[in-house]
Length: 143
Length: 90
Image (cartoon, rainbow over all chains, first blue to last red; front, side, top):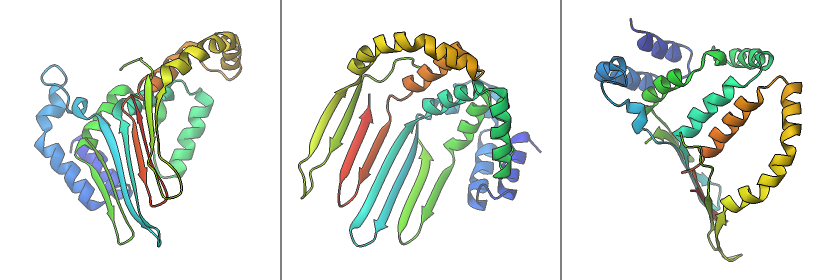
């Protein structure tokens, strides 16, 4: 089993993603294995084409009427955010890792590199989170 | 990754029954120019603080400017019956 498939299944097992999202991620991994292993020299990385993270909320807020929120965050801001993790002092890094572990996220932020972020972004390209009920509709996706 | 900080920002508040609308072009680059002398004065203080809390000052500055330079293209739009606000960073 490849490392990517194992990560997706672990995320599903820990409840961080739904079965539908896991299915999409696995399908994306099957569709593009060449892109993932070929590297930047063979083809421009797919994550390069992702420019923004979009969050769209459409809520029916009581009797006043609908509330719409549309936020577009540049992906380069996420990349810059990774740089911020490198300046966190070692002592604080341990505390952050510990706090994340308590929330069920077993990630060592010291190991978060721009390369690993690119891998995550590639997976995000095919990920769309949608929450839909009678009071609100939320969509999170990349474009 | 661009190291160019945001130069302009548009803040658009749509008119409602209660108040008039507002469309502002905020020349953010002027703010940087105005802040530059203060930042120079505060630089030694920044280095002292970095030393005190065990931060690498140049890496911290680089990360700060990387975040600042990544803000271009940010778009926030909130629309409700009471107010509607659009913010776009160039």
